[in-house]
Image 1 (cartoon, chains in turn orange, green, yellow):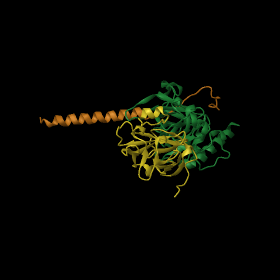
Image 2 (tube, each protein chain N blue to C red):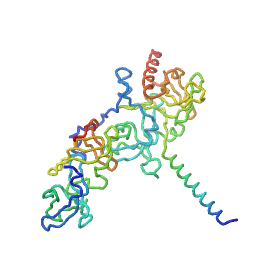
Image 3 (tube, chains in turn yellow, red, blue):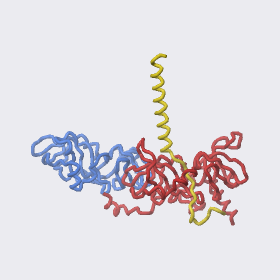
Image 4 (cartoon, rainbow over the protein chains, first blue to last red):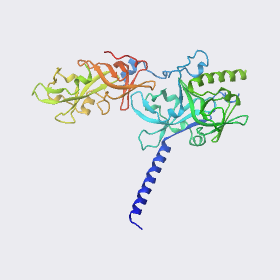
Length: 47
Length: 224
Length: 156
């Protein structure tokens, strides 16, 4: 097989790694809107 | 550095400046429409947390609210650097000096607390309402939550949800706003609302403020 | 006087008639709304680059006169002399302006100050002028001003 095939493979792997690292980092930083139940708050919840 | 200032400025202390609107407490009466302090939760996320001394100490990660009353109880934080992850500190609402469109202001870093003060790790796992399905108590699927509407003032409250209808054939082809009901159940998968709330939907935020008020009035009458 | 008028003006010693530096920045104490020192560049000793306002003999149209090069201070020395906030990143120009409510109102372009006393009269921002006394804090991220002070129109 041609030697440069391996070069392409290595570059592709690096790109995939970098992309996944970025995606993981974005997930770690991005949050959500979390609903929690707080007791002792005048029980208005159930009407 | 700020010792002298405190006297000169009239120590801001616990009285926060109001961000536009008046809190939920003043109810429907005498609130000028238009001066809307409604904002979207995904816009609050990533906002910097800035001290009155002008230092950015964190950025907002999660918005945590009480599913019963809708009050925002605080924020979890992540670091300001590109590579920093979640912070081991959180910001309870009591520590917030003002919630603005460009920053969440705190007096100083003492406002930050341990994460457990705002939300326990176990609670945080299943509690995210973004991407949740919304069902009426009659069993109708209203759509998927894509954002949460927050009204900011001296308190900050979740007043509604922006939802994306499940089927494009519905009456609301684009996203619509749905008032948050006081009786609500939330799980990781779905959120159950009274069917009445779907009668008070709005297509945009300015129209939504009036709908929220109308819905509250109706709920109050229903309860009497 | 505007910050921009003084920036770049050479600093000369009276004793030796030598150049001691060039005005590069302003160290501001936000609590007192006062310029406490000038930051210089091209000083003989690059670490001794702060000039307390009280050490200045005169601010002339072509040069700032100081008694001698000994008048310049390092950040640590300035700190000991109460001219705190000499740290980096606290320059006003180009800093975003945030009100205490968390609303951004432009960035700082320039500032008016009294070269005699150092009193900071007003911040000139991209969206108008803000009285210096409205300043609450000045950090690396932003200058924080009292809410309601941001709507002053630009004076011609």
